[in-house]
Image (cartoon, rainbow, N blue to C red; front, top):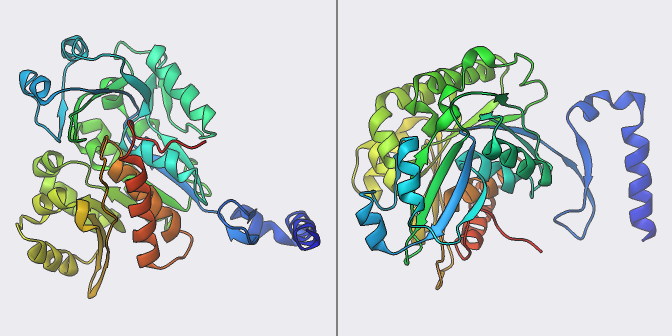
Length: 358
């Protein structure tokens, strides 16, 4: 205990010192959260940029997915008029703030760093619920709130008996995320930006992503991008490749997205493609574990077998959070892959996109 008191005293002495301005600006914290041994830890500030959605999650039979003409395991964009038809098949759904990047930001805030979220919501019931959910998790909302005829977006998530999730998403006001509304100072003190390819589906949101990418490049801020969905990749493959080449340092994808992006069919060919791609790529492949490719460097971490898969919603989002947590802490790629696998395994054994903690 004397050792802990000494270190706590030293922390206070350092952080209050006028000579410590550089360290304070980079958030030097005394971190005991994940270790019995106290240590000084350089906390990174991460900004997640994505579509702000309220997730409405319900377990359904496969027949419901077929009846609604949805593509199982993928995301389908829907109109507001279609929401009620889908919801009529829901019984006691779970509701939470969501969207791919928001899920990752939530889990990152349970790690070693500080993450905030940038998106757009309406000043309506769903928008207020979204903000309140972030506040409960001590996550700063850095985005835009506007009174608009378009509602805050929602994602209807249908979870089939095998745990696969199928999404029917109404973007709402999220489609109006406008590059002209970006505050030039928003990236001050940001160390890493995490983005989603779903934003490529609308012209304004695409331009917003491009502007953030250019701003990050000018400020020498590291960036990462999730490929989000195989159909999204198929719709925008060439433009995404161009954006990644110019503005992205690290790519997250699953094997289906990787196949669509590379236009290869086998694991071996996908691996060869990414080794030659010139960017850091992290790829998950279900029960086969997770892979990392960068030039001649290839890493693989297997994943434990899960007997009871309840819901795969948020598996990739939580994996990305686990990987980034360790990656940004300076741990090895193998350690980061393993931590990503651990987070994904935890979340798929429960309903919803967040790991439940006591």
